[in-house]
Image 1 (cartoon, one colour):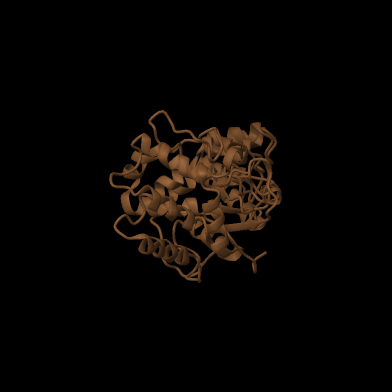
Image 2: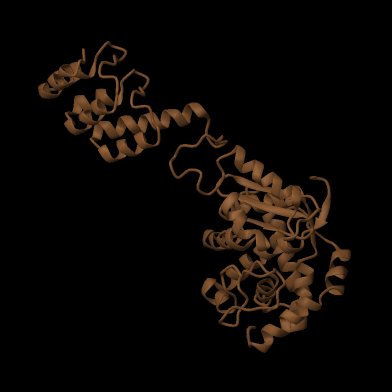
Amino acid sequence: MPDGTAGWQSCCKPVNYCLALEEHGDDVVHRYVGREPSGHGFNELTLNRAGKPHNTMINAGAIMCCSLVNLGGDMADRFDHVIDRWSALAGDTKIGFSNSVYLSERATADRNFALGYFMREHNGFPEGTDLIATLEFYFQCCSIEMNTEQLAVVAATLANGGVCPATGKRIFHPKTVQHCLSLMYSCGMYDFSGEFAFSIGLPAKSGVSGAIMIVVPNVGGICTWSPRLDKQGNSVRGIAFCKKLVETFNFHNYDNLTGLSEKRDPRRDRIHAEADVIVSLIWSASKGDLTAIQRLYAFGVDLDGADYDGRTPLHLAASEGHRHVVDFFMNHGANLSPRDRWGGTPAEDARRHGHAEIAELLEARGAH
């Protein structure tokens, strides 16, 4: 629903974390907030063993991050600073503010006030923090309003290492984005974060508005919005979309462990992907790299794959005199008599380049 607008609430948490990191660095920020999943609800009245919020993606951690953003400014300056960053992240577009969300946040803020006082009791805030002002600032950040297309651009900026793809401007440093995506991956989906990391395998942040901001690193950003929520507070249809997305495309964090996947890769067309694998196999054969060849073979690569000139890995291994590689191809069912575009065979190439023993070995096994 790209034309609709909404207050994105918890989707502000990754950006506030990035702002705090940009101003203070991760060593300072993580003196005040942890970076582990909590195992509790997003607004649970709990801290970790060090008396800090568990991570920045739950309410306590997000409130703590707000206490670290633009410390020298007054309330108006701090919020203008946040709005300016959101605008830059979204391609220099106009960012709105939902007064109705703000009033709702304030009217139902008992738990957040309790979290604030609980953290102050544990001396959790930076020295001189005005708790009430920090909570007001947090409510304002949760009431930022934009449409789904804008939030998708924000996600794409994170996917692009902090450079907005719509403007080409660098908004955040790469290290900032790396830290943010790591916590989004492990903590961004409330109590569903572990399951989301397992089944979807992408950094994401949900909000009780029904939004999910999804980051596909080095590819792009996606925003879904559907307000019907499940018991964890995530969009039902948004989660269904994410599952369908990674069923179709090889976007899961570990889909490319082998370099091969039956899923579609929109970053590469099938012809180029297959050509790359063949080139890797031929190059490994020419260099005598048996370990690389064994790895490719284990992943199902065709040992008889040929280049544009019809030359197979066996042609190259025989030409270069790599006996151990030739043995591997012979013992694993490779065609011993393939002909290149000039009619040459591996045995002929071996003899032409002074490797008669390899030519005789191939011929003894029936090669032409």
